[in-house]
Image (cartoon, rainbow, N blue to C red):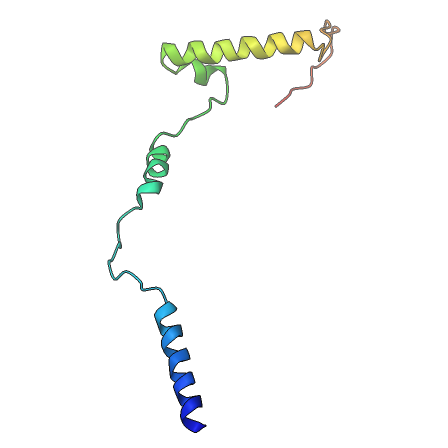
Length: 99
């Protein structure tokens, strides 16, 4: 009876050892995985957003045109949606600024 238990135990141990997957011993230290290479490239091409109209005028002509077109589209959208009502400023009154 004792031999039966010991033989069963050893066969269970062997089967669990065989089921453990082996790990690769290759090192990839300092190497960027292939799937992440595109993300590294995108960091180099950051887009700066102009803060005001003068910043737009400092851009190359092709970029200026893109920003001016975007501003025109935005203004047209504001007009269509009646977001505000234009009015004349009364004399001797101060206009409140915006951001």
